[in-house]
Image (tube, rainbow, N blue to C red; front, side, top):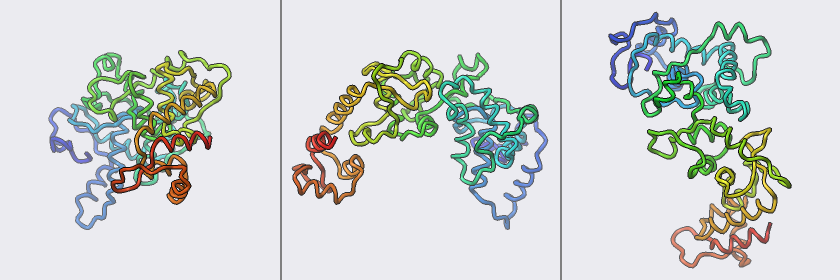
Length: 350
C-alpha cells in the first residue's frame, strides 16, 4: 500500500489517472528503510501504518474494509502523512476526536462510546502502542480543528459497501455503519451476544452483504427502537454482564432482540441507551426460565456446564456423584450432562 496498489501491483508514480502529489519526508524515509538490505524494519510498524492510511481515508467510519481497486485520486502521499500524524501526534488525535463528535453527532443518543468509536477502535486494533490521547485535551481545540481537518474520501469505500442512495446524499451515511463485530467491540458485548442482538428482523441490514458477520447496520436505526419502547412500570435495570444470562445459557443480546421484536414488554435506558434494559422482574425471571429449558433440551458439554455455573470441573463431578447432575447415557468422548437435570439444578439453586 505504501509503494503501490496491492491488487493491480502498479506503483503510485505509474498511475496515469492519478496526479502525483509531493512525497512526504516520512514516506521517503520509509522507502529507504524498506529498500535497505541491512534495515531491520518492524513488521508491526508497517501494519500499523497501513491501518492508519485506511483510517485517514475514512476518518469517521467504524468499518474499514480492504480497498479492492485503486481510485483515481491524487494525494496518496497526503494520506501517508496523515497516517503518521494519527500514529505520532497527540495534538492531531485530539483534533480528530473532537471532529468525530461533530461529524458523528447523529448517534449522540447512544452515548460517548459510539460517538468516538473510530478513535477508540483505532487504538484497539493497533499492534504497537498509540501515542494519541485517551481523553479530551483540556486545552481549546478550535485552532487545531482548523489546522488538522480530515476530509471524508468516499471513493475509498469498497464496492461491497457502496450504496447509491447514500452516495447521492454525499456519503455521510457510511460513518454510522457498524458490523456485528464492530458493534460488539464498541458495546463491550461478546460476539455471541452481539449476533443475538441483530437476529431476525430486529434491524434492517444493508444490501450486498453475503455473510452474517459482515452484515452492516446503520446505528441511527436505534433511535426509533429506543423511542418506541418506553420504560415499563415496576421494572428493574438489566445490564449485559448480569450473571443470570450465563447461568441460563442465554445472552443479553437475545433479551434485547426479543424486546425490539416486541416478544416481551420492556424498554431501554434513557441514560445508557442500548447498554441496558428495563424489564419487570417477574417477566425477566420467566424469560430466563424459558430460555434455560429451550437451550438445554440436549446434552451439555462439561465446559458449558462449568462456564454456566462458574465453577471447576471437580465441582461438576461432585454434583454428578451426589446425583444432582446426571450424566448422559451415551458417552462418546468427553462426558456430557443431561440438560433436564442441569435445568432443575439451576432452578433449585435460584
